Length: 625
Image 1 (cartoon, helix red, strand yellow):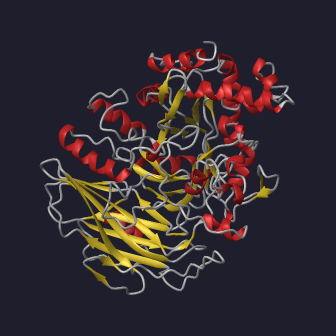
Image 2: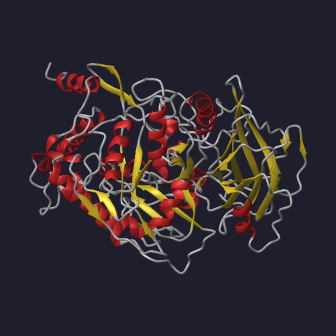
Image 3: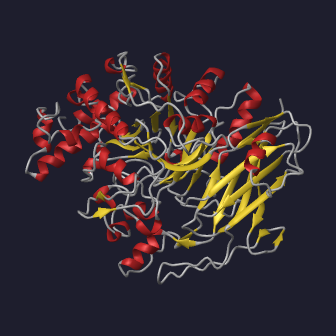
């Protein structure tokens, strides 16, 4: 019975309603952070392009610490700026190119507690759990870590680790680290954290949680005013409660947003056609979601959430970096339900809901990020630093066929967030995210412009300031076109990553809803390289130059730049629709191929050996009224 008791308690916890607003999150104190007034030298009213990562974990995250990661937020920001960073292997790692902006978003649950248990000046040092964490006996340490891990999995917090004063001290250090590395016009940082809602599915009272559904959000603060404490999943696992807390913060002048991620492993819950509690969607729910979640992270280390071959069977490029394993322990890991977990389906369902309720819950922009738990973005296939410490520490571990190996091999190298902002400051980048003039990449730095209009018929790219003219004549990605009497045209311009592969093609993905409520999707090739023929089956595939024996490729094929103005000749002005752009590079070696060549072993047979890196724009929506 003593063995069963903690499992029974955890199970009961998930059946009863946990505290929805813990005492420490209701306090009204507000932190003040650095504010930049004026304009930088790079200010551009027609926007510059910046690449960044809004999802980085350090040793201040519980799960990263458990994997022997000890990187600090300061070291993570230095890595983002292009400086070397200590790695769990004992060596230093470094990106070949720095980022423009970044946020360390450590988990709110036990944030910084474990790493501070080894620091005598820390309020966590004298806790009884800290003595076990500092023990020289490895079994004692592991036993204590597992207890704390179980408390997170069952959403039953250890009271000693969530005391308000201790949490306040830790959170203030996180915010101060972001401020220390903020250089307006050079490198922008945001105070941030991850709200880690993972509703558990239980197999029995005895064995506890079997797996969890990912409903995680990264909470990003614009700056100036920042909440005194984060709202964690210990307060509530219901995103509606998170939104309520966010609105309370706005009442105090705090500007913030939540960014959902890894819908692909939510087991169909991230984009469900119902609320968290299973109730029907309402206008109020939809408006709350739209206000608090203007963008979604759709590609990262745990795969992409754009679409799935089962949901888009006619899309030849749908089977890209699919990661389908639920959160949890053990092998085999549960595979999740795709429906309700991918963006393209959600965008279509959003149109149906708009027809019924007049508002669309899934009208969001798209970004990528990393979710790296090593302290820095892992965005380069040829320079893979792994996802999470000892779990995938070396090429041998990442390619292993042992327990957990298939999950490591199916993990992706991270994505990036691309934003069109007037300058590289907190204010400008945050505002770009709010208006959704942003896009996601699989880690490449493709430059992508996307505009929609009813007046691009005589437009050409010959003007030096064609982008400013496009703003005058149309609307950028993330915007809405309404009540058109003529078919819309779309201006797309894509340029290769300066240090990467040539471009294969530009595609437009269209989704629409019929009067009967049925939704549809169609993919259009609108520009492609090498004068390849196009027939009823589409454009012929671009030849691959990938040499698997050396993990190399050439830019013999593809284009440096592709541009197009495409008109939807099947347009029906009475039907709601969305359009977004997908840009594909030519094939290049996947990280697993680089790893296999580096250690001179056979290529794994359960993942692709080459990939076509890509970018996905935020949609442009059309509404008939």
